[in-house]
Length: 106
Image 1 (cartoon, rainbow, N blue to C red):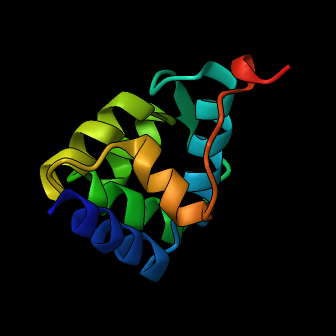
Image 2 (tube, one colour):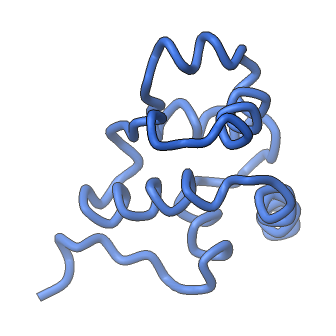
């Protein structure tokens, strides 16, 4: 069931304008090595902000005021909408490769 949820989640994100957000999450995850930290929403287009706000169940205005989004909060919302799916799994399947924290690379 969880594996199926990962693919359903990936399909959802492929249909919407989430490429920049997921790329920023991937870079942040690879740098830190865990689902922590935030990304800034300032570089996102209005369409991307609307899609992200909708996914997070918040208004675009609230998202614009925050100016950033936490990976942990995103993962929590992801698990509510797609039970058992972790952000790392989503990124791995979405980008078609293993996400390896930069801390582990030598």
